[in-house]
Image (cartoon, rainbow, N blue to C red):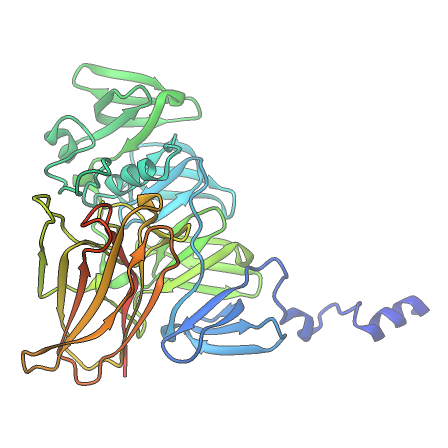
Length: 433
């Protein structure tokens, strides 16, 4: 016999076991973030699901559900700073905040608080930060070097240099054909890592085998010559999680409560859908300038110090940050500079956010300008920002690209010449017609 209480609960919707309506509602713990699509006004929503074909269902605060193809998404949510604990850096740039259990000659075993235990082939791992620096700039420097990118500059007063000019270790040869240890006391060892367990790392050096206490190690870098080369065609989207992990994956499927991620290497990981905080597709309809080769770049120093531009980094070569938030896509430039792109096909709009990177700690200033050429060779000014200063809100940029054949981004001097003019074009992108 069904009790009166059960009848009441069923009637009021509290007792809804197996109810499709209840199953369709995302958990309240899922983050609410801005959904920015290639067309239309951004809106706030939680991710409800992403199917195998990329159709994404968004749950709006009103209770309504809106659907859109993942290919139409520019980004959703916000990136988190990595938690200050062990960080595994993959050769494709992915970062997983997880405890390393063991290393043998072929695999790294780890325990991820969000997804449980997993194994990675060593050829997919660039290195490990066992004790990340407390300051974000220092942690950025180590992370970018471990996955084999250009070596960022750790000196805010000098421009970023190429990897051949500034190495994290003393010997160039050690950078290319051996594993490396960076110890907390500043010492460095090169050799072949044989194993790692809960307490000790064993390495074979020119002087013989050595056992190093794990607590003395700041970072481990694996032999880059043995790394598997990531296939950029398989890099479909970035996924961010609540612990600051950033994963470059080939596919993402969300089935109400569970998110399934697959890497280009074939590795699969599963985690609660509520732990995903950001998504940014790379193979959709959005084209990021940082993924294109520019037609030209020129920088005119205020005095005699020249600066390169940086793709997906600030001008120092470290993480793009503005307004206290990290960004994964964009361009870093320094006044006065001009970066030009040929538009190989028609586009509708150029969009970005103009900001002075947080690395300047509130200093620095610049003026941002956008010029277009319709093919006649005559450049037309289409956007000019007010003076953008460090610590100020970013300035939105949107330029109509109708008829444009070339696009130029300019960063010019402002308050105090080029002092701390670390200009970021955040999420600089071309949107399709």
